[in-house]
Image (cartoon, rainbow, N blue to C red; front, side, top):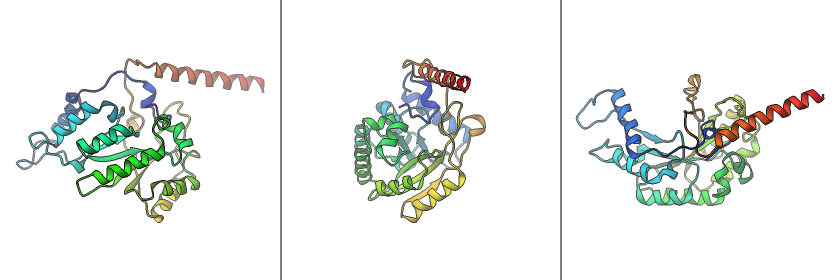
Length: 264
């Protein structure tokens, strides 16, 4: 969906994963964790559908995979322990609440439409007002006890981490059972963004909690091997030319910088 702060989105699109490939990752993880300790007990307790790509744009394959994970003859993982993360494909969110009401996480990242249009271009099609209504509806349709929706919010220095953004976020989420997960930005070459200052993250976190919004700060893992949130990339045949356009934009920015330097 081409989020501007995500290295993964810059590589473009090749194809969707099959249900077998998705389940194959669960199988590999299960093998890595070792054999069951007790009859009927699997070593995998939680699964999150996120990473490279938008799960709800591969709806049928993802739904089949989650049903296998949930099935007692598959992995026997409860619905509340399967979380699907989405940038906000509203029609499929509504469908998911009817088909298999797993736990939901939403890649929010901005408290107003103007900013989210820049960070998450999908917002131009599904704006915040409609997204919040869909989240409220989803939480009401969840049949398991924990109906809280996780809002993921990447912290970008001087972009979405100011006090006014925190105030807007509290107002936006009012009346929806949510918890906010603040994600310190993980840099990548030519990103154009920086990670928020530690103190700004802590102040943002405190303001949300003080105003009744349960909030946590994600511990960054995998950044030492460029495998943290937003850093995952692979060698793909880009059918969208997105990767090529991204490289061209980097070249033009560098060329403009050189021209400005020469003029001064």
